[in-house]
Length: 202
Image (cartoon, rainbow, N blue to C red; front, side):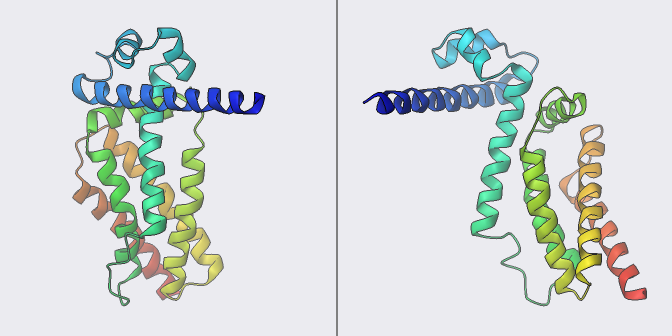
């Protein structure tokens, strides 16, 4: 009985957390990050400001909003890879840009909010495990794409890290400018093509 009560409390906390993050997501997108207050999130969620703060401050809530979307996207990619619709003969740049496109499109949905999220990451005030997990999964998948194109495993591993850091660079450059998904993908394709061309030359 005691364990059931503990589980029930844990479930309640998880439900409250999801509700607070969902409300924060809606308000951030409707009226902007700066215009949304913890008090307003609490009012909309029907909880106290202390309860909201136990989930996180505004920066942490914004990070949680993006991380929930990223986690969902990773799960969808695992069950149905974005490269599945490409022909078997697709080149490494085509396969890798198709793999990265959904993440760029996620950040493109609300560029103002994406810039706020980038600022949270740059400030380093929020510890995030999702980028570590995403880095591991993406670099492994990208390395596999490079290996499929004929690159050695050792080179593919190094190349995949280079592409991942280029991807992060594109995201942060994008946060400070007015890039589009198309132009961001073109920049990444140029980097990937340069890597594959260098491998063929060697």
